[in-house]
Amino acid sequence: MKRFMQLFLAIVLTLSVAGGISPTKTSAASFIWPAGNENHVTSGFGERSSGTHYGIDIAIPGTVPIKSSAAGKVSKSYYSSTYGNVVFVLHNIGGQTYETVYAHLRSRSVDVGQNVAQGQLLGYMGNTGNSFGQHLHFEVHRGTWNSDKSNAINPMDVLNGVFEDTPPSDTFKVIKLDSDQFGLYSKMGTYKESSTPYLGWTFVVKQQQIYNGERWYLLVHGDKVFGWIAAHQTSEYENLEKKYLNEDVDAYNYNLDQKIMTLNSTGYVYVAKEYSDKYLVIAHSQPMYIAKKLINFDGQYTMPYKAVKITSDAYGINSTPGVYKESSTPYLNWILISKEQTTYNNQKWYKLSNGTTVYGWISGNQVQELPMKRMDLTVDTKAYNYGFKEEIMTLNGGGFVLVIGEGNDYYHVAAHSQTMYIKKTLKD
Ligand SMILES: [Zn+2]
Image (tube, rainbow, N blue to C red; front, top):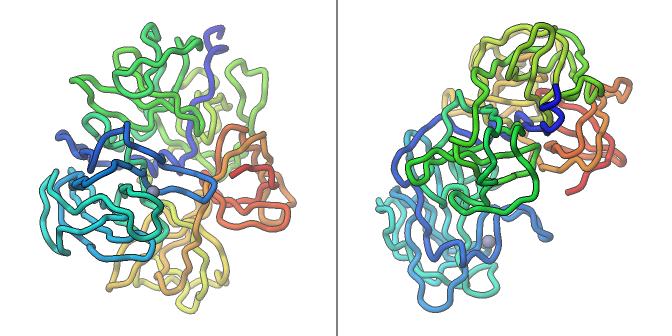
């Protein structure tokens, strides 16, 4: 038990990890810098005071050729009032579609439909559109670009070293550090001094890459990124098992002396290790122990998540796309989570669920997609059901949620496997 005292929470909002990982694998150097290198990055990916920055800015003076980051086909090449002269390139890497965006160009050298090689000239760095000073605004989307930029990923994650997407079995890779004599790395191969003894800590791996012939892991704990470590310094928890909760279950810290959360009966957890009377599970934003009251899950877990509101239930919900399922339930205005979408008869369809309950399929013209915003939890936060009558969960400080709406004193959150309300104690 003693060594567990050092263990820290590792973990994972299901939404974020599953969303950040795709089932494909590549072995070649998939992405290269379109211009310059990390020393020329003037603004990184993520939140900034003016809103979310869905790419990185690379600034270099003079005449600077912009190269295609990977081989692909030019999907757009036009002038926009915001992007200025912009080129989009679609890539297929190991079966996974990516789309890269090159904005604020002085001029464009390619046309829509043109195939481009990795490193091929797309245009020149400029200062067009909503830009203040010459720079390249570079975006990478796993999947295609959309106006919500919901597929945007941090370009830095794919530009360093040889990129390898994590296969699905590694979606929830949990590792223990067996050796920290070399510390953690700010990026692969670059030692980062630290006074924290990481030995014995358990982390979740969000991303892996091969660098210098060795596998490296990007370690996270809640929404905190700790850095990279070489695989030979770690050991892996094998066979994470997805299990559903069949009743409300209390979760405890490693010493079993503190209850840290009550998990709602309609949720699920990933079990990392099993003892005679408890499971070590990875769920939400902490690893924890819960009493053995789970049932097995044997389905497929699919991304990406979308939150949708039903704006018309004239055709009800369908058991499969196009196959009407009679129902006496009025679904109008319900907000449900869609983990899976498909196209049927030229129409987008959403598979709807709430917690672990699957409702069925509905066509895109009956729903409205709700934008989601990621927010950090600064303190432990209680979550309630829609009527505010029942507390269904306590969310741990240090985690995060995806907000789909807000009232005067609460946020409406789509998180984990449920939609719920929580009090306004979050920060942007
Ligand atoms: Zn930018």
